[in-house]
Length: 222
Image 1: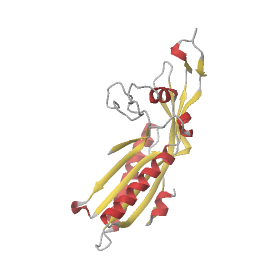
Image 2: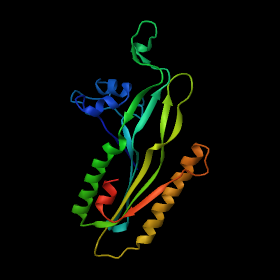
Image 3: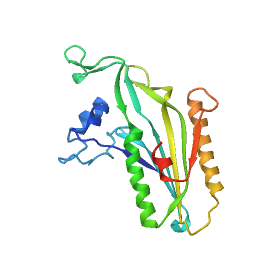
Image 4: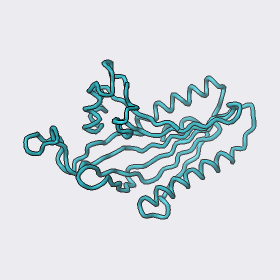
């Protein structure tokens, strides 16, 4: 399993959609070298949630004849700052950067993660002589987060901001594979996520939708 992160350049439009802390750190030399390349992101002081856009899982069958990729992401990662943000954290002398209750982070995670995954799928197909066996999109209501202040971070369920599991299974077209096995495995994974996600919000299971396909377009165009 791999954590996907996107480190924006200052001139990118998406830079302003990262949190204030992420923007400040991105422009510092604390965790980035002079060329803006991540250098110390494994440092214990680096918040592991910074710059995250999703999780990617890759599974290989013995012999490399089948590859199953699964991307777990959300349409947008949104954080509301309860207490607001002030220069130097000083309410008396520092100027206000964000007022209390304002959105601090509104990152289009899915739109940033998909291009990388699409390129990875193409590379695996071309280099391994593989073809599509199965694709699937499982979606759930997503979350927005409320952070800062005296209370611990809290998630709010938002059906209009979908969490998505994007799966693609590639295989050697010359061999015969039991597609139903992978279909069941993808379905089970979605069930597990729905139950775990639902429990966090007092539900037996989060409502989900699943769409199946057998081509690149149905997976990358979600």
